[in-house]
Length: 387
Ligand SMILES: Cc1ncc(COP(=O)(O)O)c(C=O)c1O
Image (cartoon, rainbow, N blue to C red; front, side):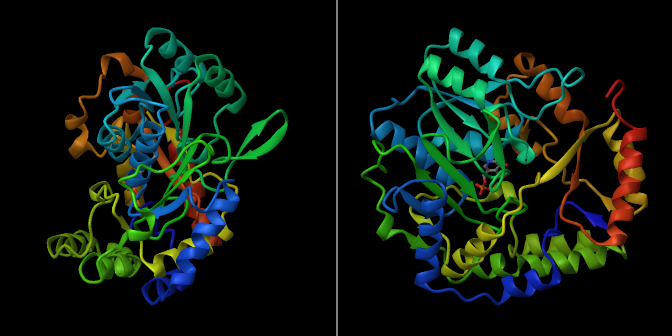
């Protein structure tokens, strides 16, 4: 069987490593050091944090505190994204401005274009920051974005949730994603490039920036020792059990029970906390993953004519793609209404989200390759007309 979710990116060895990992203060410090080196900033301007959304919010607040922005300014956000990003922008006292995707029928892309950003800047003088998300780990055209950045004097926040370890191409050279903007934010949430189930990191790369006075890196609380920590450490094991039960079509009962017991939480329900950070054992696992990041997309995306039908066909063969990113322009669907997403101005994103499916990129063995080849065949047969 093939899964997109349920910690399917975890090998049996990873499950054990995750469940029984023990870390020390040194691991925590070493992760901060490695991140600061990799993304080109000081240890002082680097902090581990509770989640990716906490990282984005803190980076934006740092822009404000360093007088590079003021409350109420506008932030360009991809119109195909996670609720977490929108929540973080609002939490910082800023206004998210959604930028539409290019026409999916002509040039399908999961990220807004530099041309769209330039048009938005012409119209909106409050637009001061843009978030580049490099969705699915697919790098955007950095050169063109940098031209727009310069022309309109914008701040760039690179959100590495999907793209840690990937590279832009700039003047025929590779430039690592996360080494360009004024701030770099990572999420270590479920299914992300670095996955320790929860967690994140924030790096202020511009030396004139500093964290808000209200943020005290050395006083951050660790995630609770009871409650959410056991759940985080056992999640890959719970996922492996769910994948096993899926053969008997029983996984939904198992997941329902875990949710009811609050032993697991849905990814979108991760909290935004700026006074709490990850545990030492999570830092140890994240450091290990940071050192072995692969330069390949996180997921492959396809546009199909009828998503529900295609999912059904694939499910019959044990290919479970229900957790594709993103099923609505601001995912998940259960929070979509809250975001007041301007559908009329973002028709391409609405269309894209309605037709997109993802394939995992983390299966290597022969059996799964065969299944993936079958999935690709079905996705091709059901492709969007003219795609
Ligand atoms: C593109 C993107 N950025 C940031 C986040 C936030 O991550 P977290 O759940 O760690 O807050 C997500 C979450 O799914 C995401 O998809």
